[in-house]
Length: 478
Image 1 (cartoon, rainbow, N blue to C red):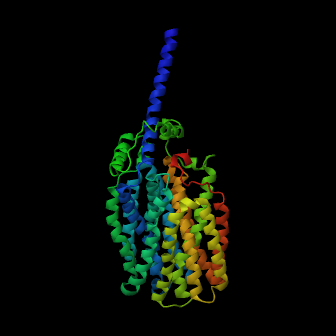
Image 2 (cartoon, rainbow, N blue to C red):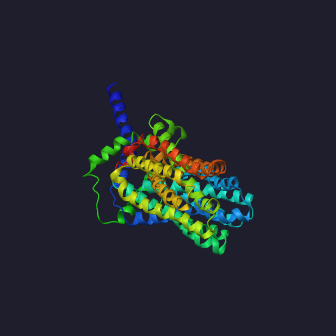
Image 3 (tube, rainbow, N blue to C red):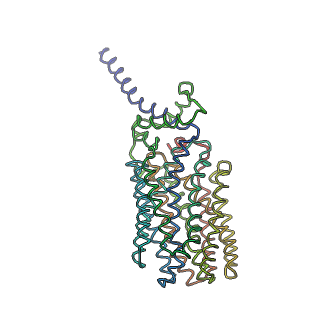
């Protein structure tokens, strides 16, 4: 009897040891990721994935600068303008949901490669669309790639980042998105009047095909590999990252207290390798986070994309400005937005995600409220107040790409981010159509007052955000 009991204890201890080994290794690898300084390896990954995000933003806005020509060429009504703008966002909704799941199942890099290839090929198709129906279809299909790329790229870059300074690291990368919008605005103002609306789509699509080849050669996210139990592959990539810097050498044994703290964050091997599930987004831990972030995405992008997509056409159709002047005035909003996002990158780790979001909704709302009383007077008031409101709100739309991956664990980071960004697609699809209806029925002032009212929803939601600044991803999300 004694021998049997002894044998049982030994076997139990042995099983416990075997089960704890993968957990310990995962904790050590995560510890090493958190303690490697930003290096040329990170810079390369950020530039390549950032290039994809640049052309994602370019392709998303390209139609806005083709529309002032198409309005006259195809005799489009305000409702048809709104439907064309909405087509891309409907596709983005599907892409965000689909490729979030693909990224969790097959990896961040294959998913990002596919999305960039799809959006670039469909961009070429847009250039050869000869009527309203074909352009609607091409923009819808292109939107699938556009919608899938950004949340997958956001998850990938977030998983490469350390806790300390993650806001600045990520937002400097994400600055490429408003720069892509700015590039689309500047290229549109120059190319469309001289070479035609078709070239607007080709300029964004052709380089995107080349970028997809570079993305395919990127290393996979080590955090994703760890979550799948592929420790050997993860370790090879981490060793490659460590070899790219000489500024710091890690001593795992010396810092074992920190590793043990990470062990407590990984309950067991099965939890570390748990398959992503949509239902977990609505579990007790994540339900509140999920609902709040959905409201933030929807409200901020309803305002930002509603303004940005309509400004060129508003200058042309409501204020009757010449084509080139309309495009140049519209491009100012993207210049201001790029400057505002750069400021946000350097301040968000000091101010905090929650306080930054609350402040931007308040400031943008006040600007739009003032604009609602002045919009019937002069296009210059729209350029000054409208562009400023867009720029302020634009910092939160970009900051949400930082915040959303932070509030979910690796096993469902891409799914959670993809589903959250799908609400920006819904809001961005609805906003242009609603603007067309409100503009036709109630005038330009009512449009800006509607946007001002939407910011109130954002203020309320941002008050319920959890603060994630300078906390490791494993600490934020169990």
